[in-house]
Length: 486
Image 1: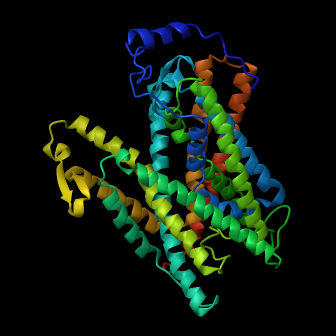
Image 2: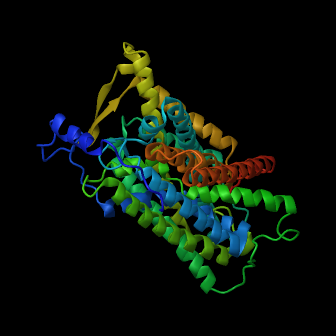
């Protein structure tokens, strides 16, 4: 990348201490930190990144490209991918500290920030992470409810014609989704739901591929969708002010599609130590982001070609596709299954944080520490039940559902989440950690251009947030309860 690190003083002694002094060097089944030998490879890390990145963000890309047009749309998508890859490469060097090859391991993103930037920045990072996690769980509640409603509407349109008044209640679907999440949330930790994560990853690839296939079929079927070099046309499709706000919001939608920095350190922690984890992770990030970008380009560009300037906010629920209705239904079923699992992936860290804090604050509380084992019928196994977990996690799911009911707008909410999380988690902290660890001198060329990059991304995030908030305000003003918001 054209940046030279200063000499790594003390790297070899650090490694020698880890292996010799800790006593783990002679154990072939353990790594240098005493944990079970890691077996991850370039292939597994690349696969983890692809499945972490590709998700519900892909559904809004056709709309985002429609706001920006044929020239700026793909260019912005490519720019976000390059920035994401570059900052991910910086973050890969922060897995070990103070040396990226022989230093002590950091097991989480937050731990890496604390070691490299101190407690104050760690607290800011934690705030950004948990705000992002809460926002994503609310967004997933909205998206799932819309897809559940789209299944009902799709069958209605098939029976009664495309002009029929087919309506669905977002609120009812959110209540159903919340009920499912209350049950799943009683599982004590993430290790108990590893299978749910695998199913979710398969579903995300499935509905993305279905959406891509339907776009290709629509283009091949003929008809003319109006597209332009600059996207939606002022005075025809939108007003001048609406064009500006939509352009800003589309930046947030694209940023959301590339949000995965939260889990990069955790993915890197699965890699075997030889070759060095940072080198493997940089290659995996390049493969993962490149593959994802190619897929996103196809979905966004072909979706825009299929729908033109009238591309819906969610191309599987906005009913640009009516037939084959069963395939549209399958796509939306995949979305529902994916987000049922993805909700748990994102809320489990919140659960663990609050419960860990509560138990450390009140260590002798019987309510916090009590746990009973329920034996499930038909040999299904044991199910641990905790009164505190039951009350607190149920309350969290209910609160996220209530917020989702108040703002059931897929596109606007995804744009806001992307805008709020992109700059701090994808750009700012990786850049700051790299410069701290590499001891980059203030006002040197590297220091200057990396800060310029960070400030530019901050401006983009603020504009995207403004556009998304304006979109939310407008959507609230025009909201009709019995409809499907796209």
